[in-house]
Length: 135
Length: 136
Image (tube, rainbow over the protein chains, first blue to last red):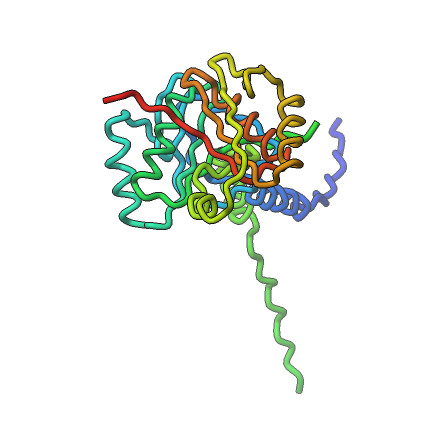
């Protein structure tokens, strides 16, 4: 005996809803995320209440807790830092230097770099911090 | 006489390639973006030198920051809240009070930022960080 299977009803789901969701997610991640180069080591900046919003642009000098350096995500030895900064500054004299030091980095590894940046001619040297609510 | 033109088949544009592209973009932004909320504190103030020289001399407070991260003001170790109160009292007495921080090289960055935070919250407008260099 042969049973007649009832014909399947055509799919009524629309993919428009899926496109909407994906589009919202795309816009969300584009707005929320920052496209900064990340350091090849762990860097957790110090927390501060009085920090100001950091605009985009500039170069980021990351300093690990042990004193390792990375310029825009590329690790480099201490001796190579000054020539690299000079070359970047020659291209753009108004360049901002962002020093992203790990909160546990010793100041003997941080403050000399601030002074070096200033001596090279950087007019805008900032310390990167993460916001902390005033308790 | 009326000729019935056969109805054109409705043009169908496939949405699948667009969805593919959007998904690739979505994954790209999710993977490459960082989501840390970052602020900044100026380390070099261009106007600091000229402003300091043009204003009348005022009192200067020196905060020593030890290797353990504890700030010492006038020989007394002060924690965050106490330091802020002491600085606020000094600023209330002399608004142009200059605060100089002399940190130990072994102190951590967080300790320096905390002292700078306390000073700014206390209303200090003239803040300097000194760094001792080894003699050549």
